[in-house]
Image (cartoon, one colour):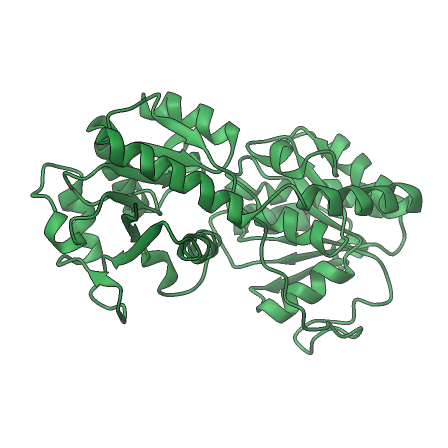
Length: 369
């Protein structure tokens, strides 16, 4: 029996984010199965929709307002599927069995940090789960928190797969958009300068490492976010000579990101919360050790292949960073462990487990726990 699944492909339109990548790679894996008929839908008047995508007849902003309240079902516009899967926190009203993806709960825990449209999406999510929708997360930590914040036990974990490997060789010299980073080891941070990423703590910890290591640099690659001012203040508190060793690149393209990951001494990932953490697996895939926090999904995703410490413990983070920068034996051990850790993840497994959930929901009308 072939199941028909209407799945939200909206995150594939516009600039690609971490969630956009997760959705794209999930849909690709689902389409490889012969027991599923995957029908993407979008809620956007501006997106260029191509068959087999369907466009729901409501602008995205209006949808968030409408769907937080009672609204007529969209079954006909969705093609009357067996299951509807909202891949980005929200679901259209429908009589079909429903599944919604929740990647992290930061915006539910910290609504003041969320943009207005994100807060509206939270209201839609709460309405959907109150009406019986099931939730899928990408880590056990998020599953536990979602059960508490959404007041439902209809939440389960399905791990995502690893980022695909680009086989294109990376040059030894850095791209022209970067300064020369070949003369000294550097610690890399990748991500928007937002509070969840905990980057002021990283800057402070780097200052302690830099006092003991005369040449190490910190490279921060990512767009400006709601913690940019705090990051600037943390850099300003460093000794001026050490502050000069903090390199801010802004957003980087895929080629530059790959170069940075392959040439960094370590990836620093001290987040206050994470729902999965693709950069961890990207770094481990190319043989770059990870130094991270114990928050959210990170221990589950990084496994035994990272040096971990509490998110706000600057001394412990500094010690782990110094250890990986100065100790070749530990560096080599984490490289080996990283390759083994990545092998735990598979998009084929993600697709199979999602298919099992779709089949369960279709068979029970979405009533199972």
